[in-house]
Image 1 (spheres, rainbow, N blue to C red):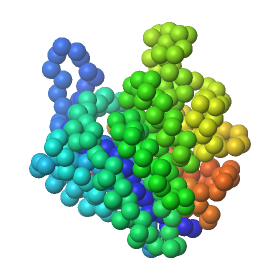
Image 2 (cartoon, rainbow, N blue to C red):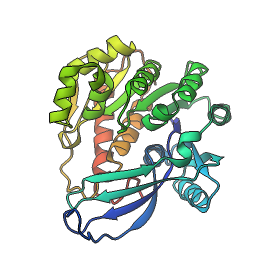
Image 3 (spheres, helix red, strand yellow):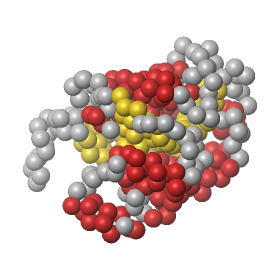
Image 4 (tube, rainbow, N blue to C red):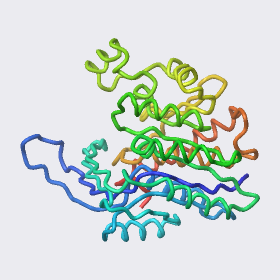
Length: 334
């Protein structure tokens, strides 16, 4: 198998976890037990990737992100290093991103994010740190870049310019975000996806990317009546092909229904593992890390067409890691 050097580009946050002791009652006091952890889609994915590269000869995980010039930035960097991640964090005038996450007794979560420094990362920073990493990749290892959908949605010009100069032997993936996309953000995401080998999203995110409600009155009405309405996978796949020219691996994270993946062949499905969910925060990030670690470790990384065995193995790995994540509090391995 091939060792992988992961370069994750994405958001870095301080997460204030607020697990509810009882179901939420609006306009009343709702007791919680606050605790602080690091988070953000980029940081969480990097942390789970590090659990998969640990012990490999030449594998490593680097996180390119942005923080403020505050005490939270130093704390986050320490947390990342403790989890075998090399932090490559740009210091900006904005404060380190922060997110309050309210976790329901059934494990569902609602997030209240403040992007902070994540919205001001520069192209020069991203390029410089990637070049430093790439120059040191062992000849026997493979370099894979993973981009958070939040990074692409907030800084599309940075993402597109960075991808334009990327070496041909570097594979790229993008994970869609839970942001509500406007028409321009949707177009930006599709343009970036066209340069990627792997596109990951849950069903709701996929519907938002491939069939925006602002251009389809019928879909708009459907979303108003059913805010979590989703599209048929085949329809979504065809939309990605026609609208973005995407010909890579599409992965759909389907929560308690498991996960699906395809490239040129039929959709493959792996069921979710039977576990009791404590907190679903970061489960999708854990799945992404498990999937990518398995996909990139194949004997011949980045084949023109992934085999069914390769995709199924990657789906299994992602589903296993997601099952582990939902049994923990917070979005990272701890």
